[in-house]
Structures are given as structure tokens and as C-alpha cells.
Length: 111
Image 1 (cartoon, rainbow, N blue to C red):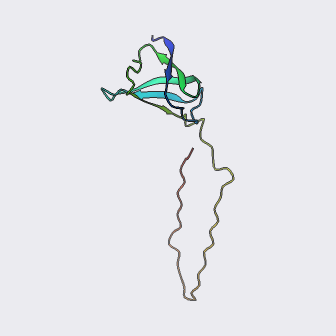
Image 2: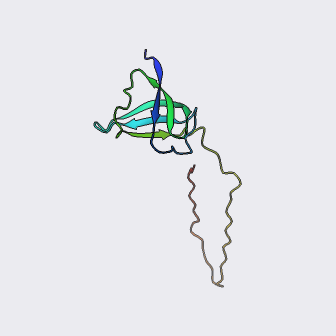
Image 3: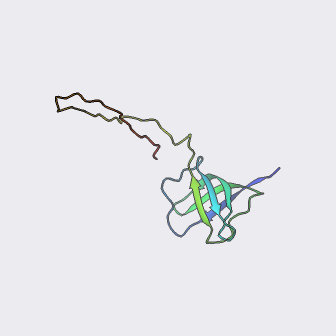
């Protein structure tokens, strides 16, 4: 069974403000092998550093050129349509008979 420990990663620039402690998960892509590794859930952050739990089986980032990114929890960051609606008025200006074939819409999750 793998044990867990913490890792703190410092950055030279401010972090994305949408990074959340307790729900977002940190990943990194190794710059040499291009393998993607899951580090763990963010346990603390500052403007320029993140701390997360890491399994003893996960190799930590070892290069300043490794690409570090985070993923938001879909369950925690999804809300339904709240207060938004659309109204469409359709009018036939001709006196001849017309038929409406279809009316469509698209909806997608946006954070």
C-alpha cells in the first residue's frame, strides 16, 4: 500500500485565481517522456505556490520544464441553468401557407 506525503511547488508567476483548495486535482506532464501523472488534491495554496498530497508511488516533477496543470471537480463545479432564459418570436409575414421544419438549440457547461 502506498503512503501519502505532501509536495509544495513554487511558481515564478501568480497562479490561476480559479484554483480551489480541497476540490481541484494537480497533474503534470513530464517534459522528457510526455507521460501525464496525477499528483493529488490541492491542500493549500498561495499566490505563487501549491501544496498537494502525493502518493509515494507517483514520481514528483523533476524539471522546471514539466507542464503542471489542474482539473476541476465536475460534480463540485456544475450548476444548472440559473436565471437564464431565451425568448424567440417567430412571425410569418406572407399570406401563403408555411411550415416550420425545426427549431434547435445547444447548451454546454461553462465555468
